Image (cartoon, rainbow over all chains, first blue to last red; front, side):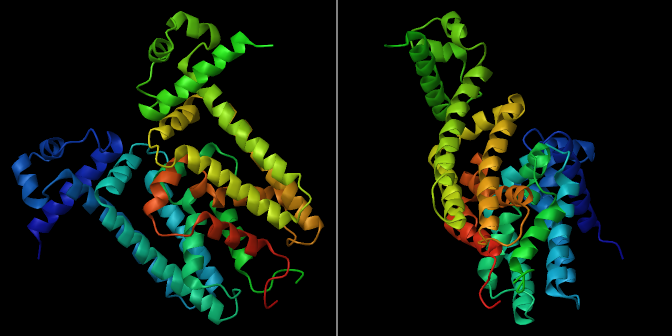
Length: 198
Length: 198
């Protein structure tokens, strides 16, 4: 059974995403999106009440993909350190695939930071919830030192921002520093309950 | 003995800084700076061959102030952990004082990232040299675990970028997460040679 309304919605989102990537969020208009779909702007507005709402739908998909990926990793029956490493690397790779080399993509994220703050905070809270759970597992199993999971979650997310933030993923490519893998290894080493030589 | 040439140079830099902060780097012209000093643009060009050169002089002063501050801390006769903490907090406070609440200030930094990359890299290398030395001291004294100082320097600088980068200092104020002091404590805890309970 097909869902024409849902399909149309999805096609609008796909088209908008391509415009945002290629010519940027600021320069894209709802009329551009409608025209390339041979729709009237009024028809697009039946599905989304503003460019802001379309942007939210594009980012919603990104966030959902990342959240599903990291929840699947968190639920695996493996050491917490391995799950934490994979969650961080998967998040970096998803963001890098979207934003590295696409300078215009940060416009849509910057716009969302100004217009759709609640949605961004909600995503950060869901990301944190997954990390917190894995950190708590690692403390309970004795893999990690006695950190407070909620506090360590905020610190680890902050330490990784260079590998998550759309602007920094592009801008920091030319700055000398660790790879994402090296950064994650450094963080994990600082969490270990029994460092070498202790 | 006065240095009229040097004084004029300094007055141009001070004026440019005010323009960059108040109306932004993009909208400021050399003619604006000259006019507010009752100078001809040609006279300003005697001292700086472009707006880019004036921007470099503004940032040069910021960088020099930060470098002098952290070198003075690095040379103190105190435990490496204390010096590392103070270097990071002093760097954060200097950057926060300049950039927090002055959204337009990031324009000049973004411009420098596009136009004056070598100057930025040179600053990062001097910052790293100071950090590396303190980390090596801490490993030698047994305060820190057996990290490789150059590698740990890159990781610590990257972990702290949310508190150093002009854009993030403003943008992240509304994102839940650790304070600069809490972040530094988390990093230091991960460097300790003898964690609690080991």
